Image (tube, rainbow, N blue to C red; front, top):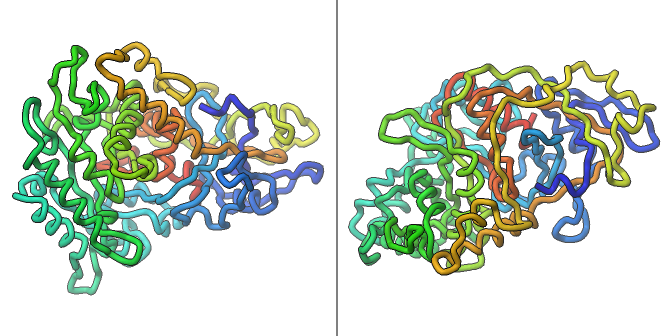
Length: 489
């Protein structure tokens, strides 16, 4: 990624900040992971700011950046084998979903008041969403669900549009007066093979074509000023769909390596989803109904998001950037079921920039004496990652690319450049130390690591992920990784 361009000393998370020439200043400490107040103070004092933001003038993020749904917002990137650093992501509509049971939601939220109060965190209904599993907002962050299989059975685009509109307008008020779908948003679970056109078939009248007509219609219906009904619809995409698109060749991603039409064509449903509020990629496999979910490989994490985004952009009727509304769905997969370890202190990075310094090059500032955490393990548990960037074709593309068969795959680097241009490094003036989660061998830890590897992945993760059917310690790990990445107390 871009971390090799400007070496940084990562930010003041543990609660210790130092302004150049002023000596060390001890600030409020958050005992769990991240202290957003410290980061806000660093921005306000000018000790931390984005490099080359879109406007050319470094803006100051809002003091409550963790609550903001859009703008140039800080994230804490900590992929394996790299020093953690605070970066800035240009986010258009941040949103996350807990698609889990109440016990799992309780484990994810932990004792964090800040996470419960995030206006961009939602519960996917139906659920009880009560007690310690409830989000703040009195039901306004609970979204309804529509079955993708039932949606595919609707006989026309008009019928599909009516079904989706009714789900957005639905009232779910209980006898106690609680609206259990007050978000007025709908998740369609899921977009599967039924929405693709089989090899040799015509698109006309297929579920994908009907859904495209429905979303065109809903995009013209005003939900509220400046927002259409289509923007209230969110689609969960089955792994079989995204991996088929990633592996396919040709303009419709339906060709084999030999140029023969042998895969389903998802062009129609991609055009439908390009009008949605969000498209959520399920980043795992389930070989058959009811079977255990297995993780995407490192190669799939590298290739699927960028190739899917390129195809989605191709099928969009406008210049809408797919990276503004793509999201990841993470779930419980195989891996060591280890409880999340205590926070640890990240290794300091050497500063090559004129304003970046670290303990290793400035021994007069012995901030290490103010820190009570052990150093993080020098190497995290094995979780192979593969990254492709905008500075060249990804290795797999270079090996497989055949101009006569697949000229369209050249669009992938364009999506990677979009990601590159929407994530910015920060310049840190002074000494800052960072507290991060001790790495574990859990499947969830590995998913978060892979989600931060590569420009496209990091940009999509910045929009906010979803947690699906996670339990126990894996739910705890998800919550801690979430709060660390989004700098939520």
